[in-house]
Amino acid sequence: MKSRWRRGLAWANFSLLAAAALKFIPIGISLTHGVTLNADQIASGLADERAWALDLISDTPYLVLVWMLVALLLRRQTGDAMIRPWRRAM
Image (cartoon, rainbow, N blue to C red; front, side):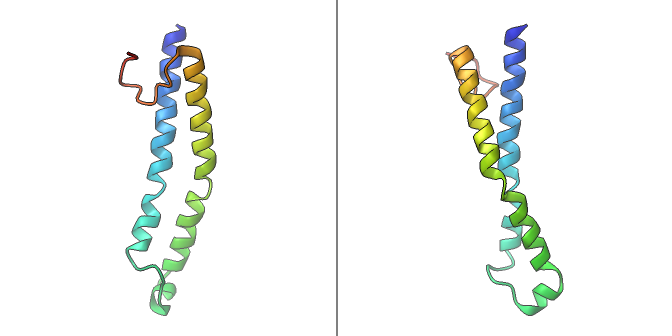
C-alpha cells in the first residue's frame, strides 16, 4: 500500500514539474510578436496578453521548490527521488 501511495506521489510530482514547464508556452508565443511591442500591437491587446503570460510564470519558483521538496521526501522515504516515475529504481 505504501509503495502505491509513493508511486502516486511521484506521478503527481512529475505532473507538477510538467505543469511548471508548460506555463512558459504563452510567454514564448507572446515573444514571437517581438520583444518590444509597437502601438498597433498594444492597441490590439497584445500587451495585456503579455502581462498575463508574465503573471502566469511568476510563481514558477514556488512550484519548483515544492517539486524539489517532494523529490527529497521521496528520496528519504524510498532511496530514490523518483524524478521519472515510469522507471523502476535500480
